[in-house]
Image 1 (cartoon, rainbow, N blue to C red):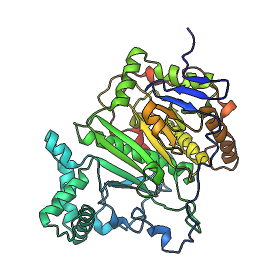
Image 2 (image 1 turned 90 degrees about the horizontal axis):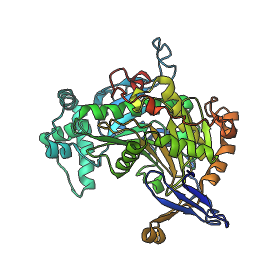
Image 3 (image 1 turned 135 degrees about the horizontal axis):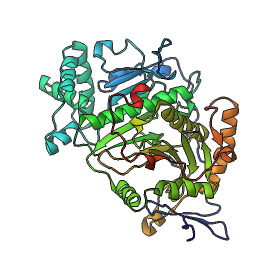
Image 4 (image 1 turned 135 degrees about the vertical axis):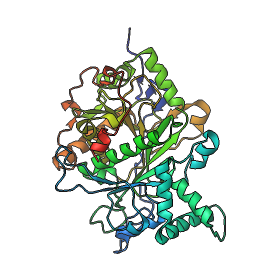
Length: 460
């Protein structure tokens, strides 16, 4: 049997691609990918001192502009407990309004003010009620004058955005809002900095790739802990989707580094297709993904715990980062596996650079699925616009083919590694082993679904 033609290079240089799981058809036509990927739409503006920590509502001196926190992650304790990774942060599970500025958070978990699925969605459609400890948090938060002022401020801003000219929330309105915030199924994980440390103008923002590898490990671990918590809190949740929109062309409302987590009551079409492929072939992600990428020389980098390659059959140039772990669920990864996945993703962001709009999309096994499925993350460069040709033909024009994407990434990764800006254990391009079937997810068909001792909790 011949290899399936997921990639076909024609005589004139046109690259035709088929996504092995969705069937999406993508063409890369020569000479259409020569335009710059990132362009400045205005001259840089010098920063003034107050911009350093108060530039936007997500900044560290404007905590009161976001809803009450669900948790915050502090920098590692120099005297960390024995057995904890040296990069582990310290999670604070509940912060009252009066203590809002008592510590400085590296990352904060806050509800999305304009959620996709609200607490009311789950209550109206499923009879879901707020767990007792979260209901107590809402009451405790409002028991302080500072808490009532904070909730009033945030709720009033939301009402004004919805067209209410002069909102006057009642005490009952504030309680309902606080319960909705603490019971939210749509959360944000917000990073501390808006600009890199030492920035003098607003030309460069603090993105995932400008974090240190250790900071990025904490970012990923804290997000996984939030993901597991959303599953655990609501038995009606079937999937928690995690994504990061970087810069406005990629859908970000604010150009401040943050991830989003949305609990939903369905798998979505993409997961149904993936589950169908796994039923037919349990090794589908090895055979159609990692192995095929290696045979076609599309591997960008790897370490002992994760693999990154130039993806094929995507509407946008896409780097696929796969965990090699036996554990399908991110919260069951060991600290070493979690760190390896975070390090490789960090390197892909760093090599991409903070000026290119991207979507970071997490894919993992739905909570009610029994088939093993690897945790994988897609990093998509939003450098093209879907237009009439795509809409009419359902053939998408991707301006950068997988080989060109690989060739853009590899030299930059070598430069970053030499400069000590990414994890040194990363093996780049021809250094990668490219052994068949590197993804071990099928070895653990009966993986435990989670628990208090998850790697995410151990890792911060």
